[in-house]
Amino acid sequence: MQHYINTTDWSQAELQSMLDLANQFKQGETSQSLNGKSVALLFFNPSMRTRASFELGVAQMGGTAIVLEPGKNAWPIEFDLGTTMDGDTEEHIIEVAQVLSRYCDMIAVRAFPKFENWRDDRQDKVIKAFKKYATVPIINMETITHPCQELAHMMTIQKRIGRPQKKKYLLTWTYHPKPLNTAVANSSLLISTKFGMDVTLLCPNENYLLDKRYMDLAQHQAEESGGSFKVTHDINEGYDGAEIVYAKSWGAIPFFGNWEKEKPMRDQYKHFIVDQEKMNLTNNGLFSHCLPLRRNVKATDEVMDSDYCFAIDEAENRLHVQKAMMQTLVQKT
Ligand code: CP
Image (cartoon, rainbow, N blue to C red):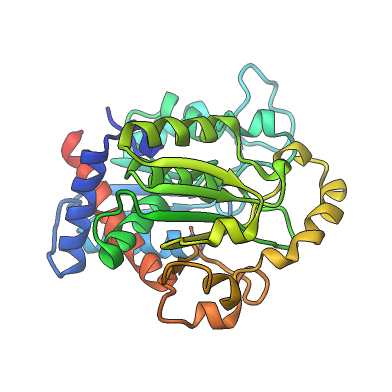
């Protein structure tokens, strides 16, 4: 059974087929491929775009979406095996995944890291447990990667610049007052290198490098796809000649669970904000962000309101790519 947990499980050609289908949906083609089917959407964390676009997408294809928020409107779930459940959790993933599989044709999960211990978080235990105990396809709505955002990002890039191969792509860290998930940053590297772009990761210092797993995957995929991958801590070098600038803030992995120590370091890097001065260094570069975005913290009003910002198009495309991905999964099952 095929799941949509990471784009690394899918070839570039398979992902391109989903992007082509998403473009057909965007142009008005309709599909009832989820007629009579249901999709469970489990949110362990807040969402606006993901929830709205999944619920709407399922309905547009004739299906039923069931939104569950474990610990809020659904029982809190236990994930540890062999534990005596005398704490706050009310039922075990073993039962949850099996029961939902009896009701639903797909299960989609949003489960961010706990931000306490990266060694634990990087195991992505929640979605892996759903994959293990469910008997239907599992969809990643953001854990330590965000593969739905990846598809929407690439769909929008292709619409704006055509073939992405060998185009200069910059992923830049930006400031945020809180340490945020690395998922979109990991995913940015995964999708840009998968499609053969010349990718630069710009971050303040080596503490902000992403997990070795994703750095290595980016390098490996770049070699496979004919693109390239490099790191810089120099803002001018990062922006120089870039054709796509993608911004994201994330917490420094060595400081996971020790955020008081990271904050004074992070606070020195407020100047990583995306502004017009930096965009002037690019090659008529386009800008995007996955949203939500704190204006004048991560990027200025001028950048967000510019013609070269495609964040809203990217957010719209979440709807189209997720419909294409769900239809693909249903047809494979
Ligand atoms: N980009 C994104 O996933 O948005 P939400 O967190 O609002 O779902």
